[in-house]
Length: 96
Image 1 (cartoon, rainbow, N blue to C red):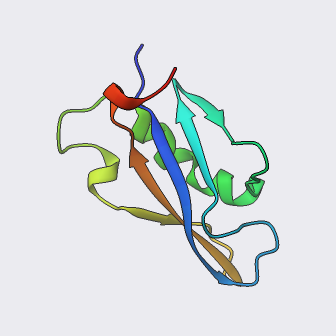
Image 2 (image 1 turned 90 degrees about the horizontal axis):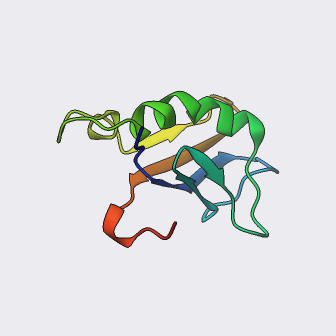
């Protein structure tokens, strides 16, 4: 099965979160998580976006994917919300 590749970026942190920083970027390539060296991702925040990530990597008809519904997703922590942007990568410009 072929999967879409994604780029996930933390675009905003509302409140005091000691585990997430704005600008942190990680990738999903061929259904595998890739976190660049020196970057960290909070396991609770990551857990909150696994379902949309799982839905987004599955090939869908143009305009019918989950990323067509929302551009940003958030961690549910009411005291330190982390806002993620999930983007589909162009398959022509992705390194394997």
